[in-house]
Amino acid sequence: MRITTWARGVRHGYERTVAELEAGVQFLERRYTPLGRFTPGPFENWSFLWQPALLGFVATSLILAGGSFTNSPFKLNMTSTWFFGEPAQGFSGTPSQTKLLLSIVLVYGGLLLLMRVWLRLAEVMKLHAGAPVRQLWWILALWAIPMIIAPPLFSRDVFSYAAQGEMTSHHLSPYILGPFSLGSSPYVNPVDPLWWNAPAPYGPFFLFLDGSIAKITFHNQLATVVVLRLLEVVGVAMIGWGITRLAKGLRRDPGEAFLLSAMNPLVLLTLIGGAHNDAIMTGFLVIGIALAVNKKFVPSLIFCACAAAIKAPAAYGLAFVAWTWLGPLASVRQRLKPIAVASAVTAVTLGVWTWLAGFGFGWVRNLLSNGTVRSWAAPATAIGLIIGRSINALGVHSITVASVLSVTRFLGFAIAAAFAAWLLLHGERRGWVRSLGLALVLLVVLGPVVQPWYFSWGLVLLAASYQGREHFWLLALSIVGPFIGLPGGRTLLAGLVHSNPLLIAVAVAILGGVLVLPMGRWTQWSWPEQSVDA
Image (tube, rainbow, N blue to C red; front, top):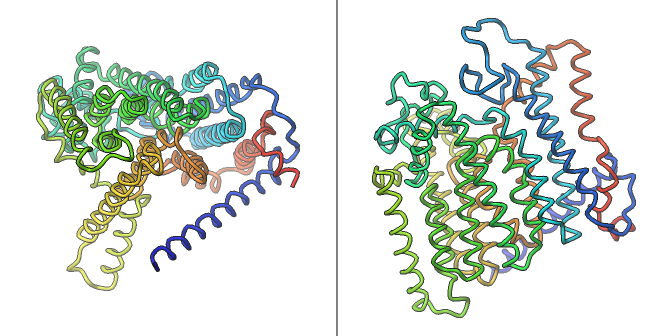
């Protein structure tokens, strides 16, 4: 009884806190942005969509421009890694501080503008259903074009994928060896030194695709990177196609779900701009869940198993589909049959991809290989670092930081697993797709490393299934996520301090102007009329 009362108190406090936070954000927007000039009238139609389409294209074009400088901190500055924006061979001069600062201001300005446009459009669609999905596809293509043209941004992981594909094509097992085993190959130098000798944690399906791409491109490093990015563009297209069918199956607005998933800044910036394989994994997962909602059991399991054969967290989808297939009234005994079928389909699918890749199941033991990264953004890691370093500072050196981290990270996984089990058992009452999305988000938050592109796993599913305050957190994570670990902020501040006053004034004016830039009368429809009257 005390636990129930405590839980209700926590729930009440959470609702009140988030409501106050949301009201505070709305107050600041009304008071200090052009939104305060508008008094919402009756919603007219969707003919205004060309305006956010154009503004979003300008935003991603600014990111492209800023990320294309030869000394941009947002990409790898190494010769022969992209078609433009790379330093000349043998260049040893001093990089221009003005160009460096301009690069950072352009990228951050583009990010802020993209966030504003997407957020306003999301609020419009929350209040007004029925946005034309076909037009949204064209807007997605327009926003994505600069990200496809740009060098790999915010991460060097795609160069690791390329190296692992080259290893696969030469029958070198990425589950045992790291990219450094390629020797003097041009595939090696672009890889982050942290991963030179690290085995791959990716499933056999991705290795098969990766190795095939290296062969198709005739072992050309740059061509391999380009095709890998195009593969992730296909993954985002799969997300868009799958989410509209999932939303229809859940009787939700497909236009809003499409905007919150495929057009999400997190997806555009990290899955296309960063060319992360999470795009193709999430694409297969979303289509699998959409098939399950539309009562196509075996095809659903095949797609989810393919997603798990790219990255292991997609196995959550298999568990939820199998458990909920017979509906909420099924007994545990009745659920054993779909669980057995799911296990058989998964085993066959993984077996086929493992046979095609040719390197066995070594990826399973490598799943925690990214644990070598100590990310302060991950609570389990941050708490471990604080406790471990505090103990060492007190003079106790028999307990290492690594040993404390192993404990806190294990507890994080245990808590995430417990939440996932609870969500699985109560999924049909709460909505099992929504529960699956929450379970994947918690897996990221409580895991050893938090990378922004990891959030796409769960947020894409929540785009078609969220309820209540989850909309606020979906928007918040989508806007804050891309800034996690984003380089350039410290350089920007240092550049402002050490630059001449005119340059400082220009940088501040650009970033400040982006925050208050009028975006058009269409933004008035993102406010509920009754709240404005009040």
